[in-house]
Amino acid sequence: MKDLTNMMKPEEVVEILKNTDALLEGHFELRSGLHSDRFFQCANLLSYPIYAQQCCEALVEKMTIAGVLGAVDTVIAPALGGIVVGHEVAREIGVKSIFAEKQDDKLYLRRFKINPGEKIVVAEDVVTRGGRVQETIDIVKNAGGEVVAVALLVNRSGGKVDFGYPTFSLLEMEPITWAPDECPLCKQKLPLVHPGS
Ligand SMILES: [Zn+2]
Image 1 (tube, rainbow, N blue to C red):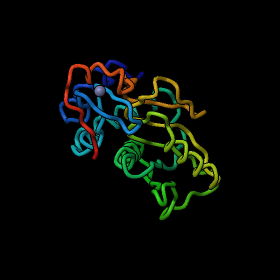
Image 2: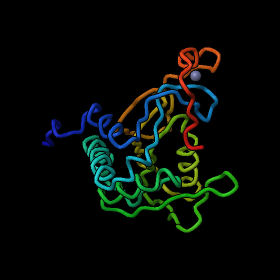
Image 3: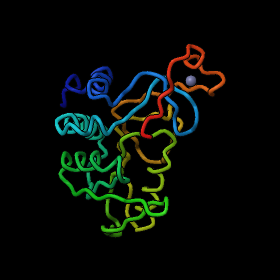
Image 4: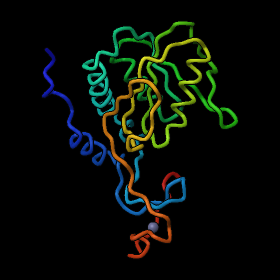
């Protein structure tokens, strides 16, 4: 029997995210235009290979315990954010790692091939509405591949996203957001940060 006590706890994940500046606290304007007191920049965590490895190991452990990894051929991720997660998850499972990449704001499989019946895990760093993961799932299905599971470092959808496949995340954290005119941090006159710009 697998010893469940070895699994990474959510508070440990949060600590790693904070220590690597992947979880920032402050006053942020999100891409949606809403304001929030938190922002995820998972690339900062993934810039430390040791943390990338630890987190993806823990994610694969969850999937192993759930029994979804019986037969997996490949892990696919949407570029850019998902690539490192996909690579580390694939390494841990012991399969190959491929990625879909953006052209004219749409994801394509430009340099890899998916064979009919290929069993595939879709990996991503952060999901809010799940658009890119859904696009990647569609690429797999259109190529005749079979989606086995979805693996996420952070699920910010608050349980609202349902891809129709077993979905695993290392951390679930719903964002707290406000319209600018209702934002308490604006009322406190805290400087607004535009992350990623
Ligand atoms: Zn604000």
